[in-house]
Image (tube, rainbow, N blue to C red):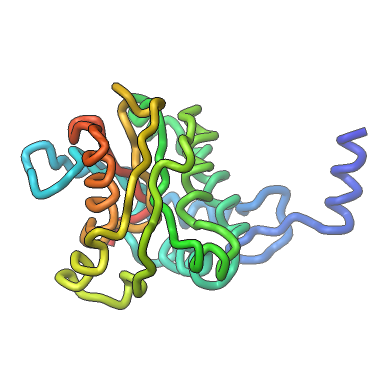
Length: 221
């Protein structure tokens, strides 16, 4: 019955590639998938000895340019949440390249303000985190970090302004599920790291050790 219903839905609402818009059986056609594969570059920056960072390492899948840049902009600013399905489909294909992330026990998402969430209808970083969680089987622990101040978009600021803009913006709640766990903080883009640094600091203020925290973003600018 479910298969029949799915076929009917596909006839009425045919699946298209969310990048090029062509009819396709999945959220990503083979041509666009190959384009993303050329941009894909899973990397790690080590901050173990950089004590200006409140986390020990940063992982990312892409440099913030070309096709992935346009997709993130559409996801973030153009009300196209379905792009997260394309990202999820692609990351599932590339799973073997980032299975080392399974060293982490839980995922925490960088929050957006209530105002921003109401405007967009979703948190784009949460959609990305769901894709990672589903692919690797790492649970998301919700309602840990809270954005307690509304801020201007980081994308409109320089490096110094970004640090000032993010300062004191996030708060963390005590959570028993965080004890002795390796935490993977997830956001969409890493530019200066100010947002992630402040989120990690909020966790540290609640007793989490710096050595427990790593960060992951879809792209690095």
